[in-house]
Image (cartoon, rainbow over all chains, first blue to last red; front, side):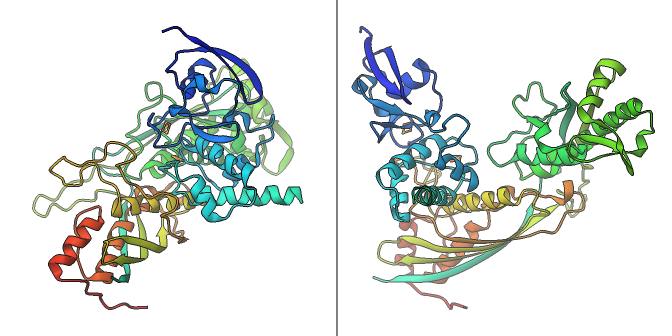
Length: 160
Length: 341
Ligand code: FES
Ligand code: FES
């Protein structure tokens, strides 16, 4: 089948690519655009390591067709840091030792960002719900939950 | 229906490494022209901190800032041989090999510096900040960088070191089978508080309280991180995950993350950890390492807590609601055991 043109913003820059009709957003971001922050885990929507934001909403890159992203704004973990300055979530993940192997981290960060952008002061239960679709084999989740809560608090402090 | 509270505990001795064939680990250390050091290992860091502790150990032994040490575990084809990252052996075995290699490299570094400063190498000390100076005379000094460059471009010396850690192969007593399979043990004690629902067989872990003795904690935050994550994995093995729930019958095994169950972020329990440091005489800077032991005590403690709660002994893992309900049926209902505060 003919390849189709798609244009979207990736971490703030306009990108134009040709994609197969059945190509996933994850495949386009990784192979087509060379952003390897979102990971490929299960490929069937059950692990969350491919989580990216589409117009601010968390989406599983492995289950999203690239052609549906025409004109949208996509965010991945590569766009979190501002030059050498880490995003508060990244800083909190480091501070709280919220990664070991790090394979789940890009997805966790994006799930957490979607939460904090929408709800700057989440409860612990809301944090748990926000990352419930992201599997982590290493950390036992506790450090990740603590990091997200700390980042929220940090942001609150800065805003005040 | 009733939910029954239970408390169980387990204490374990956990061997560090294994003595089959001496359990060797190797390390190679060399200086680069910029005065920074590369440590080549074939031990793999899966996220447990192998690189970080090797870096700390190398920097401490070499006497240089930690920023100036790079640990390369990238390739077991080009790195020196290592038995691998398993058996909780990483910190202990690899760390010891890194010390030997770093000591040798440090010796050459000080010789190079001595030649430049025209002094005796035995009189030189490092300040840990990238300088080498004569003991008691800080002004008579040279940077590690200048010494490395002099060695490589002027003196024709390779600043490098080789390290191996090997323990003597244990003999086996012909009659009793007695042997010393390991040289160091770590220890742990863990208490689990949980509740069991006698109608659904559901187990909810409410609290973990533990104490771990693992030699010196070379990186206390990473030790804690491993203990937290490892206990989660122990809980998962105790209550949730298995590829073959009806082993040896392979049917009904989970084929993906929808079917292969693990506790999620909503299923975790608070974990109160105490780390006891008793430096191991043969460990690198006294370290033994948490390793697999961070998961192991959880399993027996959970099984004991379930017995305490409802009086049934389940001796196959994971302890699923199905097993609990079948056992309760066979026993004729829950029989809570005595609880000690
Ligand atoms: S790779 Fe997309 S959910 Fe697992
Ligand atoms: S840090 Fe390894 S999977 Fe989360």
